[in-house]
Length: 179
Image 1 (tube, rainbow, N blue to C red):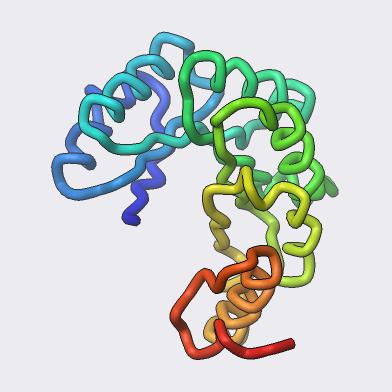
Image 2: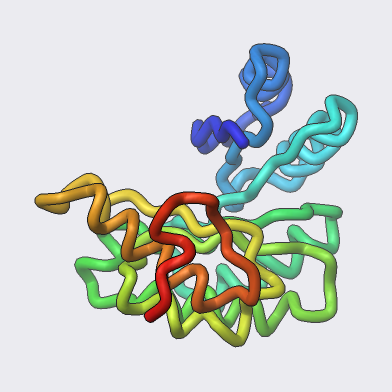
């Protein structure tokens, strides 16, 4: 799946989303703090093009606002929300798994799924086990891009992800390695 992580805000489908979809992107991101009218436009556009849109909860607002907004997004018809703990939030001591857990708890009786992202490491993926059915994807940045050996870190993520799920998530050679 190809993701355009453009974090749109104002007229996200008309201004950019439709062009990314037409070019072959499967999913675009829009900021969850966008006005409801923009959120609805993004949902309608993605549905019309038979594509996906995820609403990124990264913001300088507290987790309670994010949990409430995730429910509002689900009520508006969003199928995906990104639980994104940004670098500034991580620097302030926020644990990404706390937000992911709160949002998954809030959305457990909805069809809205979560993209877990921001501050994830192979060592903290096990904390996501209770929410595995609600997690659409795990997106990783800094843990891979800032490592000395990205291939090893990717392999570690694959191993940990396979521990979360009863079926291997990859055909990569390390997916079959027993722990």
